[in-house]
Length: 120
Image 1 (tube, rainbow, N blue to C red):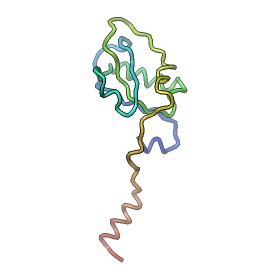
Image 2: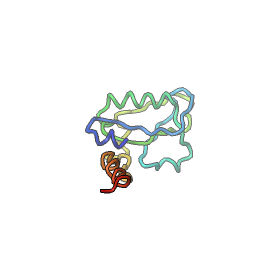
Image 3: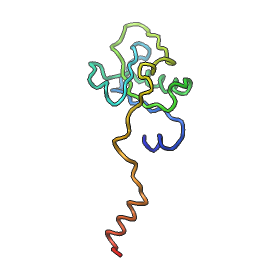
Image 4: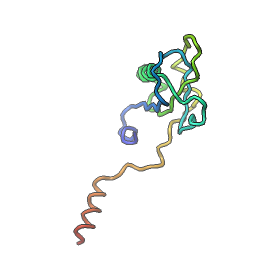
């Protein structure tokens, strides 16, 4: 994910909760960042809803260069209307934080290994 983010390409990264084999569009979608949703009672989302969010990420500029977690509320028993343009609004400008790790420098790693094996 960090490679993609640092590539300069446009991206949307979705971290879905447990995937359910249920019809989409029957649950309110819930978004968060950095595993905040792990404390919620329901940490699952229908596969069809994940697919719809990915399609909507191509159609809504608010999804551009964002990374977020996705789960859903329990089933409403009937169709739920989702305003995808506003879905990420509750996050403000927040995206998942990838600051904990660094992308390894492969060339530097190879050079270090060579120095360990063949000291000058």
